[in-house]
Length: 361
Image 1 (spheres, rainbow, N blue to C red):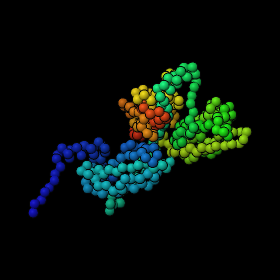
Image 2 (cartoon, rainbow, N blue to C red):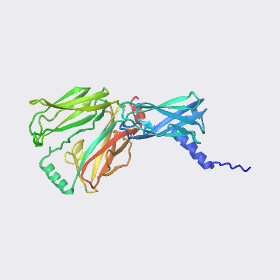
Image 3 (cartoon, rainbow, N blue to C red):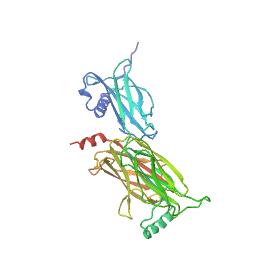
């Protein structure tokens, strides 16, 4: 009988050990048998599509356990795992892929070892998330837009929806509720007063517009409260009683707030709404993501992730995704070649726990 024994090269074993030390730097200090867990990103938006890679390390008296079957199951927060079983490798690590659910609460995933009472639980909180709308137009339309901006500094444009429709229950996240009032024949109804009221839930309205504009458009900013659940906001036309309501979902806050701004060359400052850029495939728009705690103090050392919400139209360039001492990350959007709206979102990917701990000292 001829036996063939496969032995991993020493360099490969060294690499595996190095990986274990990087992912779980304190595993050598563990007494007895334990299940260690980590995920990246550490937090996810509950959008039903964002994914996190989970590493589970099984150790016994500080040494990795090889060939152990680890079982996983989602116990709260929805979402699903690509697989519910994995075997630890030479570094004692088993990997799982998790896709977030849409429930407004922290995801919880339980891990156990077959034929053992040993268990561990990993929590993936809902990530603070922000959104930014851009409008791409033809280069010719952009020149007209520049002319309008020059002659009318207060020019702005309204959307026909509420965006975003999901906010963190942190008492500071803001969405814009937009509407258009038209006559029976479909033509705009300008100059008609509208009343904005909160029908249910906790929040605050920031009303700067009393009546519809020349195109029949009306908007109000909605600021979240601190109680997770549904925030229902209604717009009422007083003379007829016509009422339209919109429900926002307030999700559990992770103790941080993130906002995404663009550099508005016409106001020499940062702005949230009204960004217009030519669809020429090259124009650059400077953006700033800002992460703060719920008191407005900047959080440094927090890693963010920035991505297109819908279809990619252009490019996003981030040199350093970690917030500086001012809680900011600078990035750029380079225009695509298709006209129409572009939606960008940014959310906290990792480092929130460490950033919060810094504020305690």
